Length: 156
Image 1 (tube, rainbow, N blue to C red):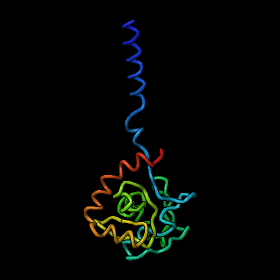
Image 2: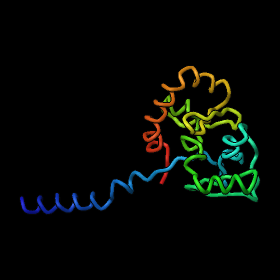
Image 3: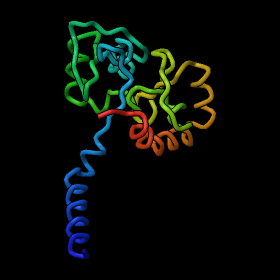
Image 4: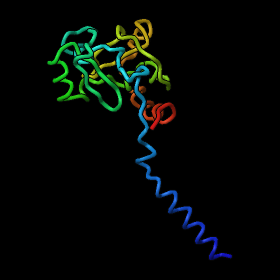
């Protein structure tokens, strides 16, 4: 009987190891519409280069991690493609204040700022005001919460 228990325990352990922790952790959470369009079609590079939200053009498109980004120009697409981590919005394009409170919330293209060289979006300008009452603290908390939010609200 003890031998059967040992073999059964070993079989269970091997089955658990077959599902790698990396595979289990590969969830993603992106704020995209049903067609996969990110930022409601706004150009992520324009926030950095133009200092304002600018609508993208479907002629200039890149896909990153399942999100489709549109750009106002071929130059913006080239900049994004060369360094997507620089230009893609933080928190998968979800609200930074919501992330600081432990959940994913939609965003408005007009409620944005560049903090620590990152595109930070919020639900609206009122919520951005709440976020800005403690920018550093809220950003730190959002960064700390984000992996858990992805695990609980994301998908593989």
